Length: 441
Ligand SMILES: [Zn+2]
Image (spheres, rainbow, N blue to C red):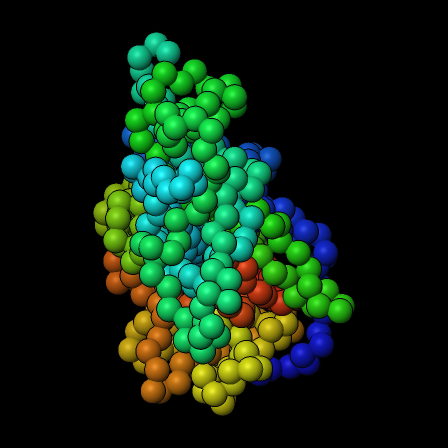
């Protein structure tokens, strides 16, 4: 722990958190998150580049590029000639653990229409029961002219629920609960009136209602989510309860940091990258183990030689949430390395390289915080426990970048409703702004 725990952030806490909560509420899937990030970038005159076209980049130009509609990179080209350039990168991920609808999801029993689901990532399954669930994602269809088309869809209302089994029928549930996802998680969509109305028909009529010329649904990637919007909780609104704080909080704070730094034109090129598939290991064409980031950095440099020189001088902050010390489970944390909510961002360290932080990159982050008088903390997992990971080590190994892994402390990571402190997002935004703005670090 550093500094005064009751310190107040300098940026407007209410504004940032209210905007963040609305961003998260409107981003039930990575597709929606990327769309909403684009909307913010366009307001600040970032222009879209296509991976498939030649890039003609200008000094201080603002650009963004997307991949698969679910990963996004934004950058502001630096002042310096490309071969002497360096990159200041902040990375986060757009995906969160959830229940995904199977391709042939229909399950009918006693006139209940349920949907089969796959578990995406490390879902805390027990938290998904008795929630008002909605459904969102991306759909591909054949349109009325016979061409392929895609659309984002969001049912928005509570279209499904996974009811618990009553305690009277399972007396030992509070002693030992295990959940079989295949058997126990299919949400109930409706009670059937029309037996021919399968899920693809339901989806087609939803898209038609949204104004799309659907002839036939071909495929979809749809996820259930909790309709309950983010909220301040605690007697003094100390906390924010929300789905997907891991890791849409970092995506939003990164874009705020980038935008807040736009008046400071720097020699280094500022890059923000938000990638899909972190929760399932990042090994995909859009994930952190794929070519998305290195190909962008290389194209900014024009040639391979200046790319290699630039990478040597570059640094990345990998931002993903950390585990705050839970008062009911204090024994799960190392006594000297358990972060407290609302006491500042956390530098994450692991000797086995589950985090990419080293003493050089940790010092840089610490210096950024110290100079801003922003408190910061350090997390190391107990020596007798395994450690989670982030996009940090993968990006570091894949691109050859120096990386520091950081994040805000949270409770209930991978629950359908996670919890963070209202101050930490703002502290992190201040540090990100400074990281992008300073020339001397
Ligand atoms: Zn995460």
